[in-house]
Amino acid sequence: MKDRISSERFSGRNNTDGLGLLADLAGTWRGKGFNLIARPDFKDNTDLYLQLNQTRETLTFEPIGSPVPNRGFGQDDIALFGLTYLQKITDAGADGALHIEPGIWVTQPNTDFPPQSVAKPGQLVARMGTIPHGNALLAEGVAEPFVGPPVLTVPGSQYSFSRFPSFNSTPFAVPPTAPGIVFNAAGSSERLTAPTVPATPFPQYDVSVPIGPIPAGPFNPPFTLNTRTPFATAPAEPPLPPNIHGVAMQDIVNDPMLLLQNDIERLVADGYTFEGTALNIATATPLSFLTERNSGAQGATAQVQVPSFGGGIENIQFLQGESPVVGGTQELQENAQTAIVYATFWIEKATHKATGHEFMQLQYAQMVVLNFPILHLLRGTPPAYVNLGWPHVSVATLRKSFG
Image (cartoon, rainbow, N blue to C red):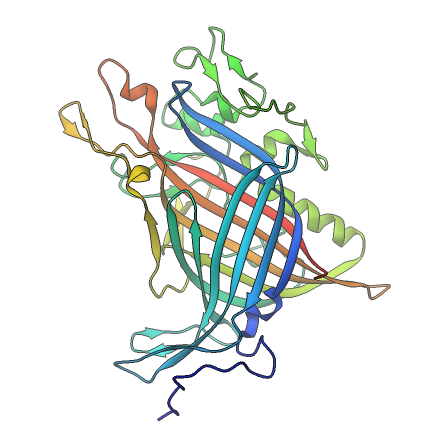
């Protein structure tokens, strides 16, 4: 039997003792990213407002510095080790606040009661986060070391060292409209996926469609207004750039992950090599993904598993909405209820092959699914209820900074 874990907690020789593969998170990271979110738009009487932001971010991790004992009933006590974090994201243009999130990352040892384990040298990890919109998440998964360029598409992996094959922005049907959640494949576009429903594409996802009133044509009917950044922003924001670092804006809207890949491609071309740790976490498992782009809900799927030892999401009642009667049936109408979160974080040590120059880089891609129904169908004659999951995709490339 193991020694009893002390009731008093003391710091180790180093404040990162026990963190294992999470140790390199400690410190402050700063950099840039991109945020895409489809949100309800009651004010403009449209199905969604597609908000797109280039972002600045500061992400600070502080080691807890001592073990956190979890007492066992069916087995010996276990000790968790962790770091607190504070994430602050602002708009890169006006520097307005977009997101703040305090939370904790922890490691958990393998356990017997219940049986939860991951093969060495991997570690079980979890992230607990609180979002001021009225959400809290617990996402679990695995930390695993890697050697080689992260994020890039390689044989056998859409995004190297990520367990998730897609962070695509195309919305999809969710319960009760669909029997389950199936994410669209990487490279899909809303414009090419909509005909598989069949449905008219949402103009917000097509950057060739100008913002504002839509003349009669392929989108009107049913859509009369295109609400996408910078429509009705205050203060007024400039139009979206045609590209970011050479990546076309339409491709970014479809797959913001292309920005992370572009960052790595440029470093590889400059002569840098990589090693580090990949953190793959989710609030639910398994997750289902379409395997072919633009194939629609009837396409072939593949399941992705991550180690899970609990977890989920809680929303305040406002976000969960109400269940009024639609066509004789009570149907849930959410105010953007958060349903699922999954993410990959790549902790990267970059080394130049010729000069030996080194730096630490942190990249992440995060998918948050917001559920709410299609407004214009609910207001049709007769009313129809179609519930969608709307991807909220965030990506960033950060570097560890002084202080």
